[in-house]
Length: 188
Image (cartoon, rainbow, N blue to C red; front, side):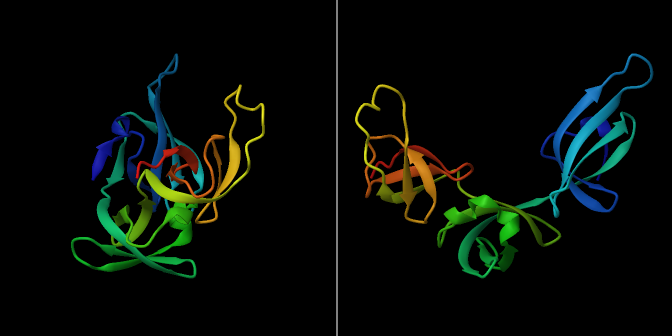
């Protein structure tokens, strides 16, 4: 759908030069002389390449409507991860590079949000947090309790994170999937 360039906002996806671009940042710039322009920083959805483009405020651009699906993770084969749509039960194979770093937190039967365009997956959003067990935690060093210090620990999926000194191996913890950080001790 055609929209005015001055309505472009962060998170919008647009078709520009035959490619899909996700808007990272948009800013209206008013020079001392001349017409206002829209400075848009965007990332190619498929390759991840970033670019900056300027549009005149009266220009129109092609905005793309993405479809959001609740999909359940089924299994992984090599670098392909198979998800099933919760409504239609159709299966979709998604490459590892589209999921990104949070792929280490995927667990069987986990429900994720998958954004698609014309049947092709563009992004996969995992739940904000997951609960995992610590299999390894370094011992507490005496005298470190005065400051807010953290110690290294290893999760059951092999990811290393930093946890507070009072957390021991065998404890279940809540972990942020976006940046692999400790949130809190699990309440179970």
